[in-house]
Every structure is written in C-alpha cells, then in structure tokens.
Image (cartoon, rainbow, N blue to C red; front, side):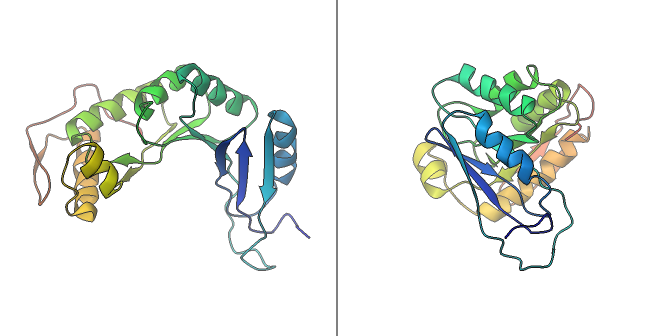
Length: 212
C-alpha cells in the first residue's frame, strides 16, 4: 500500500517509446501520475515498489520528465514537449544517440515553450570541442533563461571510437577537463587551460554570461 511519504521511482511507457519519470522522493504526485495515464493515448504507467522502506528517506519533491528525441521527426519532438509542458511535467530530457541532434531540437523547443526545463542527458565530452559546446550552451541559455540543465558524460567506446572515429581515451579525465573549461567559458573568462586531454587558450564568449 502506498502513502504520500513513500519514495518511488516511476516509469512510463508510451506508444513503444520509453519515458522515464525521474521521481525519487516523497510521493504527493501520485494523483498527477493517474491523470497522465489518461492524458496520452497509448500510455501505460507502472509504479515500482518503494525500495527505501516504510519511512521517508528523501525530502525532495517528485519531479516528472520525458525523454527526447523520439521518432518520427523534429515536429513530433516539439509537439511532445509542448504536450509535456501543458500537462505539468517538470522537464524534457534530451539523449544524444545519433540521428536527431538534441541540442538543435532543444533550441527549437526552447522558443515553443515557456516554463518546462530542458535537460541534456547527456552530451558526450568528445564530440564537440569546449568552445563549440560553450557557444551552443550560451545560445540555449538565452533562449530558455534559467531552464537549461547541462549534463556531460563520456558516452561509450562504440559511439565515440566507432561512430566518430575518435579514440576513447581517459574518459573520466576528459569529462572532468571539459567541465572545468566549460565552466570558465560560460562564466565569461578568457581561457588558458592545458590538461591531459584538452587545451584551450584565448577563447572568450562575447554574448554575456550563461545561466545554466
């Protein structure tokens, strides 16, 4: 039996496309989950058994999000994001899996929405240089002020070495150094960085500070 104090992960599967509800914490959102089950044709939801015991262990509120991009096209992604905002979802999360470019779609969705958060989950640290990534993130932060969540990751050997032909070397160091350089760039600093996997000098963004 579930109470509003149970800690729950909640998942949803919609029309053959998986949607993850990132819901870890107290559970006042069960009524909203029930409403969403009726709100999207072909959508079925499952509440997984609480795994933190009977006593509440987290005090964060439930937050629900959907994952993009999904087929068949970019317009479908934009419409699904707008639907998610209307229905009260907290965030749209973008996966970088090839095909539809998540950062480009995020920009399109940013100008078609007003409140929903836009999360990158995650951008591979190998496929875009820090300067290119900083420019993109800065632009997105201006299109969706205060709504952008930037996630960096190493990705996988198959994607980086196989798809892109880039040696998948020192992945943890690469992610750490990318984050260090990116923070400096987004803060408006001129770069002077020499690391094990990255170097950058004399780069500075010219359009102000990002809010990420």
